[in-house]
Length: 278
Ligand SMILES: NC(=O)c1ccc[n+]([C@@H]2O[C@H](COP(=O)([O-])OP(=O)(O)OC[C@H]3O[C@@H](n4cnc5c(N)ncnc54)[C@H](OP(=O)(O)O)[C@@H]3O)[C@@H](O)[C@H]2O)c1
Image (cartoon, rainbow, N blue to C red; front, top):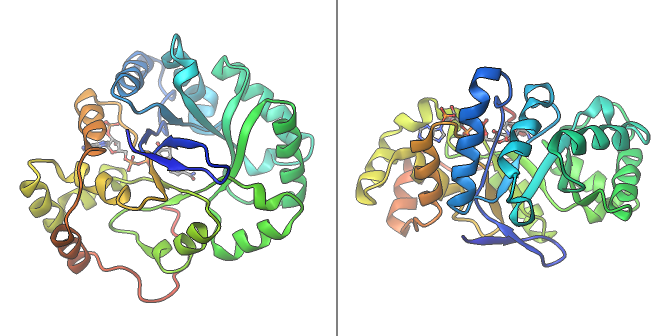
């Protein structure tokens, strides 16, 4: 599995598994656990979850899938903005640790910016890190200006990542945010890399490139997000055939001609755009 480098030099998998909408329905949990386990066996050992997903249910699904594998996993979870106060962060983290049935979260993110002062959130993250409850912290849905404000705070520059929407149909971050993160040696985590399985997968350009690689449009969409050395892609799949496809996407290298064809149909941004969140 290809890796991406965190600011301290640690390598993490460039391809992981999302869990949004898992843990929402009790009768689906068994299949969701099996899907995550399959993904782990196929090398997708980075798992992205959040206290929000399934109201904690997704973290419980991750716990079940982690059984016997914890040491090889890199688990990412997120705190709600309304819990991101000095006291709220450690309390939320304890609840997540309990649901995840683990003693540490590898990467803990602020899900999006809310009304609590960011300096309080960073202070709370740093305390959790010192206590060994989390290994790294980061943010999500932060635009360039938010990142610039963050790194000016005490310890703000210790942020390990920014997780944002990024797929072939939503390339706004390429104009400013992605270069900014590269300059600050912070990987970007691309969420919704297959556009939530929607109309993006019917793109003619994706279909043409997929045909050349004997792959599916979703695989090309994932390989495309991973073409950048600084991007971690986290597709979510509950369907075993999707999990297998997504794991194999990590091995697809797109050619200059493939990238040009995709650019022609889904052009890169020519000016700053505000950050997409859906
Ligand atoms: N930080 C944030 O604010 C934020 C926001 C959104 C998402 N995220 C994270 O990013 C993860 C991924 O994003 P997402 O769940 O929004 O969207 P996504 O990964 O782009 O798409 C997931 C959907 O695509 C389908 N799919 C997956 N692989 C496929 C394949 N090979 N072929 C066809 N369809 C496929 C899935 O179906 P099945 O499940 O039926 O297999 C599911 O319906 C989330 O799960 C979550 O962990 C974070």
